Each structure stands twice: as structure tokens, then as C-alpha cells.
Length: 186
Image (cartoon, rainbow, N blue to C red; front, top):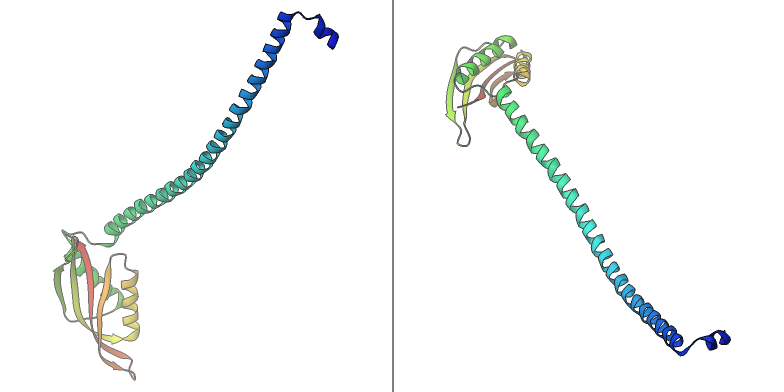
């Protein structure tokens, strides 16, 4: 190898030394740049991980909100269905409530002599209420049949009040005052 170096001229030796020095400088530059890039890559990797975690949380929140929005839309549909199916129409509501109560009494075999009606607008919303008051004299079986008919009835009728005036355990007859309420939209 010494022989080869001796064969080189002074200018070639200086060129080789300059190339070697340039190679060393380039290597040092590459090492320093790569270390900086490595640190930068580590920083970017941590940022990327944090951003990925935030993205996962955001997607979970979006999915939750989407489900909740779907539930609210379903609730709105359910309320509209309840409104159309269960409440009486405002223009004929009070008349239909009276007819339905009388029909339910007839189906259950309940006979009453007089029914009084009270009408009231509810404070909140656009609903009005009709309360039918009557006295009931009959057996426990007919009362049970009447209450079951009210429960199965598709429109929104509720038992507001029952006052037992007299019960005869020997004959099984009942005397009571009852109030039924029906609701209709104005």
C-alpha cells in the first residue's frame, strides 16, 4: 500500500486528502443531521400517537352523538305516533271521549245513571282534558272488566280517581265514585 502511495504525485495526494476530509465532514454532517431527524421523528411519533388517541376519542364521541341523535329522532317519531294514535283530535275530541267512555261502559256491562263532564285546558302544551265523573254500582267482576277495557283501549284514557263508598262482602257488590280523564289536542 505504501508503494501505491509513493506512486502518487503531490497533487493526487492532496486531492485524496481533500476527498477524505470531505468524506469525513459529509459523514459527520450526516450523523448530526440524522440524530436531529431521529429526535424530530420521535417527537413527531409522539405527536402522532397523541393525535391518534384524540382521533379515537373524537370518533367515539361522534358515534355516541350519532346514536343519541338517532334516539332523539326515534323519540320524535314515537311522540308523533303517540300523539296521532293515543290522543283525541281537538275538533271532535271531547265528543269522541264521551262516546268512547259510554261504549266502554256498555262493553263491560257497567250501568250508570248519570255522567258529568268537566273540561279544562292544561297549563303547558296544547292539550285539554275531559274528566267524566260517575257513580258505579255493581260487582267486583264488572269493575275489573271495565278497568281492563280501559287499560286495553288504544286511546289515552286514565282513571283519575276511585272513591269506594260502600262494599258489601256478602253480596260482592260495590258502590263507588269514579273519574276518568281523556286528553285531546287543541
